[in-house]
Length: 334
Ligand SMILES: NC(=O)c1ccc[n+]([C@@H]2O[C@H](COP(=O)([O-])OP(=O)(O)OC[C@H]3O[C@@H](n4cnc5c(N)ncnc54)[C@H](O)[C@@H]3O)[C@@H](O)[C@H]2O)c1
Image 1 (cartoon, protein in one colour):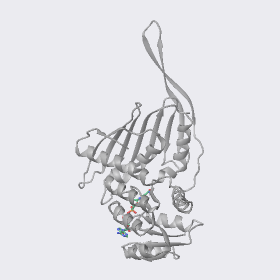
Image 2 (cartoon, rainbow, N blue to C red; image 1 turned 90 degrees about the vertical axis):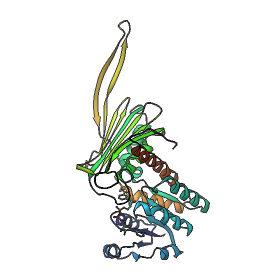
Image 3 (tube, protein in one colour; image 1 turned 60 degrees about the vertical axis):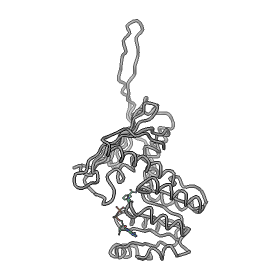
Image 4 (tube, helix red, strand yellow; image 1 turned 45 degrees about the vertical axis):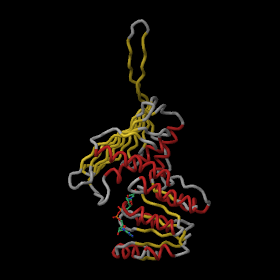
């Protein structure tokens, strides 16, 4: 299979490396409007074919799939063109910068019978998949809360705020792990250096008293990548900064008893063992690349298809609206 990676800035080279390492891939083309980035990628991977002309990629009949690792604002026009030229498309997260554009891409891909996939990379992460397995087994009971913190210093994006850059990850993890859908969102945020928010606190509400909170920040002095999932039976901590034992399952919780006659509710704490389960450590981006290739080869829907991308874009668009309205609760239909 011959594929093209468009955009070889910070993230694109990782995609190029994984496509080159995939046994089904015979040739990788790289396209960028920046000559220096093309020279860089050619030097690093001499076998790639480079061009600064996107239309030459579109017109090349041998290229079956186009992978977009360009700034978010360019995802829609570049993906639309790719679909119009009958190419399958893998778009870096987030799928598009707004809901209308995501819907238009889904319609076009379905009309043409082409694959449209979004790189929600954490859905392909072995640790996240292990957490889902534990949650689905019923081991931790019902989820009471999901609390995510993703903060560090930089990398400021030029065209999107911190929600579209970082919260995409936590929202896609939340969507993958919690099978129910959130019904409302509320968010606050602030931009300190330009109009784009560099810090935001997002709250999501579910029907069954489950609450989610996501804290994203480009201005933190330390790097934290941590998710807490509180279940009625057990609790999970996923710390992605830890080199090993990223997942810890705590047999901790509270037990409530009402003593007859005394009319008193007793809350007792329960502390049991902590375990750290093993998980698949395959590079998640290799699994993303493989999913894209297999979905084309076997003519099946990719796991993170356009609909998965649209769901996250809907939540982020609503969160952005809430920020503009000082944290107003916005009903969701996702
Ligand atoms: N999955 C992940 O974990 C992850 C991590 C980082 C970035 N990303 C995503 O990857 C995408 C790119 O982010 P980045 O940090 O690499 O940005 P970047 O600015 O470092 O790189 C973007 C590249 O695209 C090129 N480009 C811009 N417009 C183009 C066009 N019209 N045609 C061809 N090339 C064009 C630029 O010259 C640049 O080299 C974003 O969507 C971002 O959200 C994903």
